[in-house]
Length: 237
Image (cartoon, rainbow, N blue to C red; front, side, top):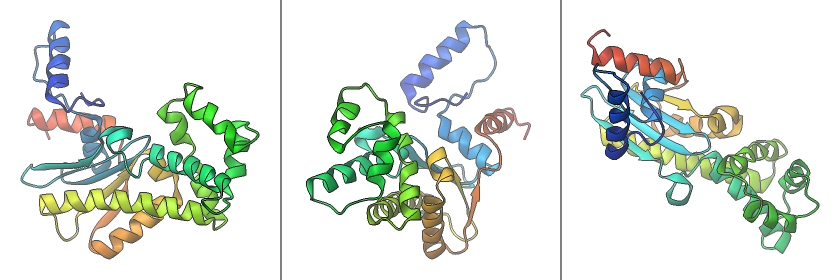
């Protein structure tokens, strides 16, 4: 079973207890959702998985079975380069532009129109009092691509910052695992795979830092990764 947060010991113990109470006496593998994404995305157990959705994280595994991760600490402690991070930076750029602390951005009218707001000041109500979730803020990340399409300086800066953070997370994991040569790096998450500018910038960075690496989209879904892990644990793979 792979689920968000289940990589921590306390959560694994609690979930294991639930399975036992339900009558499962078989061997159990309880892990987080990024691990099954790695197994499914690479259709293997060796390589690096970079995810940017509402949150962000990078996880890798080498042939010796060593695992390394970077990021995934939530929107307050981390999640750099995530949809939430990009969405928040878009909103910040709108307010900076409104104050005169930043340049005018093509994203401002786009976002305000999408949210049905009359002006930037209305964002205060939207962000702080409307009960909007992290996913609502992350959904705004799509406007960074629209801004990049018209060469908007703020949008380009936001995308480059996000790509830099995701690249840094991956490079940290790659170095920790001692991976070299033609390693595979899989990209996943709706924000990353849905943004041609973010994915393009990240691929370009890998081309410079790890020119022999193969950057790929997910080969199979995370659910298949859970199946692969179960087979491996049962010595069936």
